[in-house]
Image (cartoon, rainbow, N blue to C red; front, side):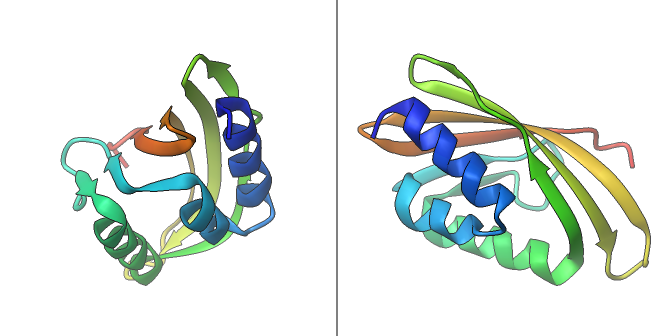
Length: 121
């Protein structure tokens, strides 16, 4: 798949609540996922670690809604804005979050993703 096609699929599936398809069909088994400094899962390598990060997220946050923007593509890179309405389960605090996701594609698969967002609450 070309970068634009991968980006379009990621947006479509995220907006349809079918993120699992991204992991199953778009990601390399050797994916590197990078969160902001200080995150519990700052760098996850491989699908097993990325799955653990997803389990942690689901244990700690209730997601009320999400929206992913149309992608901006440049060569083998693309970026999207993810918007989320979430509640932190332990505290009960509801908030709206935005993050920028930047993705690298090689050999028809996403090999790296990095997320940028405010970490100051």
